[in-house]
Image 1 (cartoon, rainbow, N blue to C red):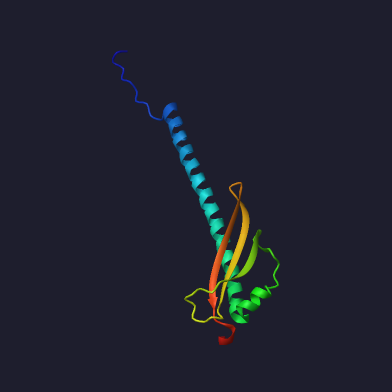
Image 2: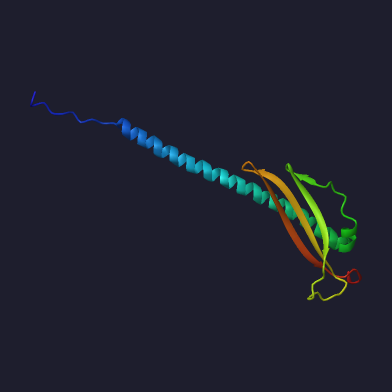
Length: 140
């Protein structure tokens, strides 16, 4: 029996298998966390893009119809407006005309689009402010 050679064993031990499973589980947990974080950021960026689009549409309307006229008579849109399940609220404000404005009767307007959403189980409120100087009503 002393002359008998030991057979070489192939395969993995239970410890090696468990270590592999633990490493794989840690990797999957990190990937799941990153994926959910990317999803949250993507939703927030989409909401900001939609809010900016709403503000730009109102600025275009101000340019076409006169800024002060639109501020005095806001557009007939449902307020708050609903885009993809998110409620956007729009407020229009005439700001003090800056000293650098060329014309005294210029209208310096701000469009503020606000919204609230649930992100990662928490209510988050965001807003987008867009300001633009419009030439005086006489020079249009």
